[in-house]
Image (cartoon, rainbow, N blue to C red; front, top):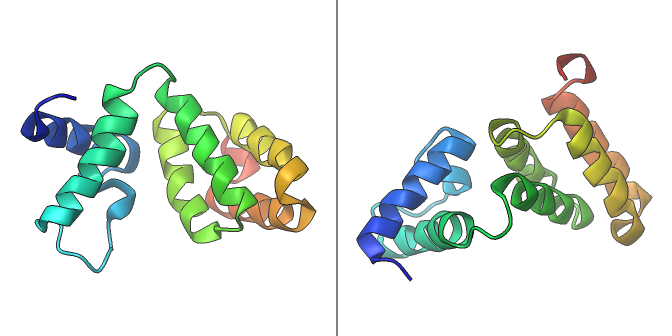
Amino acid sequence: MADDGYLYQQAQIKATELFGTPEGDLTGLPIDPADQFSKELLTWVFGYLFTERSLIPTKSKVLALIAMCAASGRSDMLRRWLTAAKNSGCSRDEVQETILTMVMYGGWPVARDSLEVLSEHWPASAK
């Protein structure tokens, strides 16, 4: 693994690319962003998983996370990752297909809820 300080900087860059903030989807946690745990979590998610482990493209990782949020009924997190989807180059149609494919494991109720979140956050007219 790369130098921790360097990886933390790369994590902040990736988090900003995806979410517009150096804390990424960790923004708003009841933990001070300067806290060591917060820095390590950011480094792990956005430095290691999203930057250093580059075999799977960012766009694909974001779609996988959207599927997981949808399947688990985590509409709050889905809203956050829809921002990352836009910022990583996903189309609205790709996100919608990801949610519809997830219905196989998550079921129709969470798929329907997720499609409603998608519609609110990313209207079909704004493809």
